[in-house]
Amino acid sequence: MKEKQALAFNLKRLRQAKGLTQEALAKKVGLTEDTISKIELGKQKNIGLKYLSLICRELNISIEELLMEDANYISLKIVVSGKNVETLKNIAAEFTRALTKK
Image (cartoon, rainbow, N blue to C red; front, top):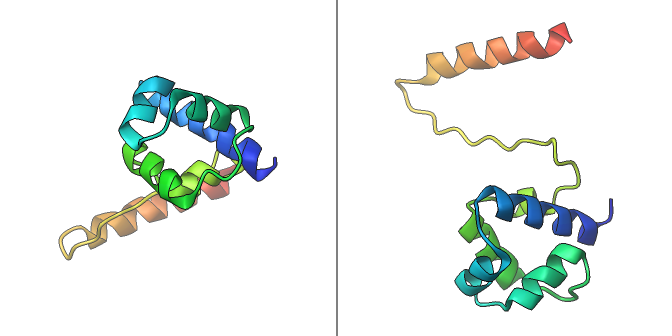
């Protein structure tokens, strides 16, 4: 999948998952509804990092998630403190076991 197609697919999917219309997202990030539509159709040229960043902030996602070609990829962020290190190790071990069983 090309970058523009991945961006188009992911933006539409993630915007809809957040329950936002094209118009609502456009207003929140300072673009027009037409521009959001063109991005989702893969027809918008030169979107600009500023607007991609604003879109990501509004959708609460990383830029990688917006641009990734594999929609099955999952990004996981974990904050580790002294109190939850052991729990995190157990979760990781269970996850690893589950993956190796397939």
